[in-house]
Image (cartoon, rainbow, N blue to C red; front, side):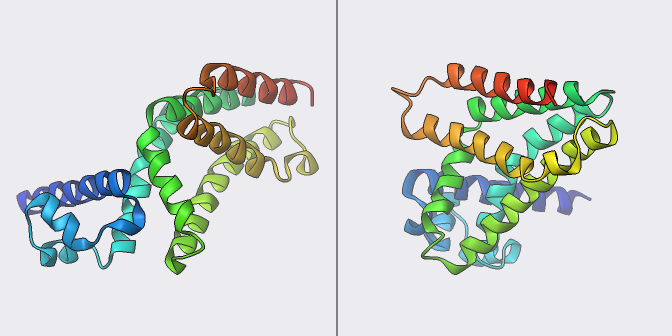
Length: 198
């Protein structure tokens, strides 16, 4: 049991060091040796836990967004109606945008590599597919309640994910000029208005 706990602690240390290097240097500007140096451990130990840099960076991306997803699930599961669920989804997404800038910086680094690193597109395809699937589950609840019909729901997950990402990226790229709270308030207003008027 203690060995498993130690292994999980080491994995988390490696993931956190990798996240720091992605943020400080950019995805393409560090190696497994740099991660090892950051932690004062051998590269062999890192390879014991992760097969490759790509394998490791996938875990960084997953960890960056795992907690917000679980928080949404925990707070929404008992909600009986779709409007409450969609409102809570929006609030959670906004909290992620406000409080997980490092996660979005990591994601921006991946997006910058998608044309140059073959495995990165695979990573991002899976990441965005999982996000859309998560939103589709929420929309399915709206379909079950008779609020959303199949035609109205088509493409909605893609739109909701794209809008949230767009707000997050603008906030990171232009924090001086981009008025985050105004954008978040309008984002929620537009989405709720849309669903209220179906």
